[in-house]
Amino acid sequence: MKKPCSVNVPIAVIFIFMMLLSTNEVGIKVVEGKLCHYRSQKWTGPCVLGHDCHKSCLGQGFAGGQCHGLRHLCYCYKNC
Image (cartoon, rainbow, N blue to C red; front, side, top):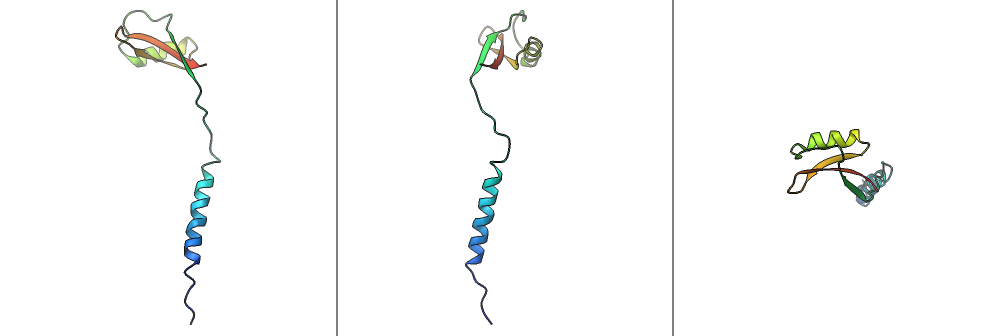
């Protein structure tokens, strides 16, 4: 009776590993670009809750917003 070939196991493992690596290339690719920020023109008063600033910036046509700085100002973001 012949012994099973032990060379097939490492080849199979390498093949599966290569298949897993190649599947990552099929997904959606996100390109990170430069993000520009602008002080919100409609926000008044101190920016305490980032969620409210974010919603305000969305209403102004930006991609989002966040509170920043010691003066707690609302800044809106969009891709440059």
